[in-house]
Length: 129
Image (cartoon, rainbow, N blue to C red; front, side):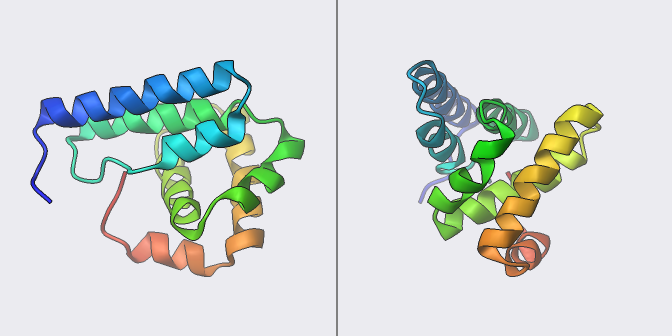
């Protein structure tokens, strides 16, 4: 696959954002999360990666705590690993404690579904969103 230019990455991330927003407006939060996690911008410049991460965080915030476990069960292994990568990225960003608390609920649900192997895969995978 050919390298994308910064503008191509930016356009791709903005398309994901628009699709996620439309799905959330239609109250399809699980589909919105899957879309946000689809094809992460691993090769993009950091600024574009941050925009992609904001889209994922926006999708995560649409869930009530009681819905999180079911949402993680609907994700395939690749999306579970991608979400785990984003969780660790978010924790490095000094987000508000309330947001971090919600992220820990996602983390616990992911570990329950995917096992601790997901954490190991994230820590040793050099592709970062």
